[in-house]
Length: 125
Length: 203
Image (cartoon, rainbow over all chains, first blue to last red; front, side):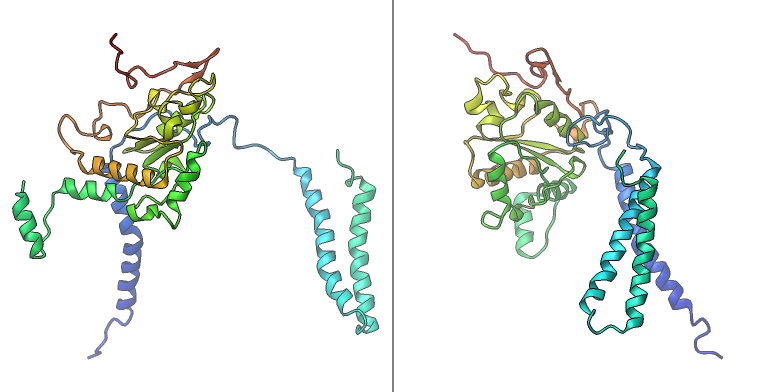
């Protein structure tokens, strides 16, 4: 006879306990609110809270999708800064191969900038 | 209802008995959460009251909530201008029941030194049911603490049933008060006549 026929039973019990621990207070709060709390809704009380002001307009405003270009151009400078600083710090001890590699890397980024410039994205319209 | 003498006798033996009403009110009175809401210089004293030297936390009232959804108490701390009055009333309406109002300082009570001003509301009790008024210009933090203690006494004395039960347990009474609108040269209406009934002066 196996002394422990259900080795995973304790795990299942613990999971049930954990779920009950999480859901129990929520259910108790829900039941309390449902049956005991003084429920007095109203026009102002159900309105959106805006520091006492009445909310105006719609929260679902639209942004122009072209703004993604500014995000990309920002990334060019962002990545450049991150890699240029360690490059500059260890500049004197770098081998020639590393120097050429970073030049190619900068060339790639500058290429993107030149592309954006020629397309006219740097002019705020 | 248990006899007071028996209650105290039992307490000496380590047995505490209470009513559901007493327990409910005890819990409410010791966790009055005020709304983070300052209008003028009284708010500075309100901040001081919540800081270490005066320590409003001793009374369970230090949890200033930045949203009316979680607040129990509105401390009208300062001059209520006519431009601000509708916002004050709307914030009060947005607080869940049960809710209480402390009018802090001379301005919130009556307009104070600015009573003659064309743009100053002459007391928030024209629109809201004030539970405790604190005189002073501005009142010291001790005065605010005293007001919180008075409010606690008031909450502890509230009956949960019967004709004089508090507003939040009486379905017939409204939970919201009308928000005044900006009129031509005053708020419309200038007061809530159901709330504001000053004693008539007999000459």
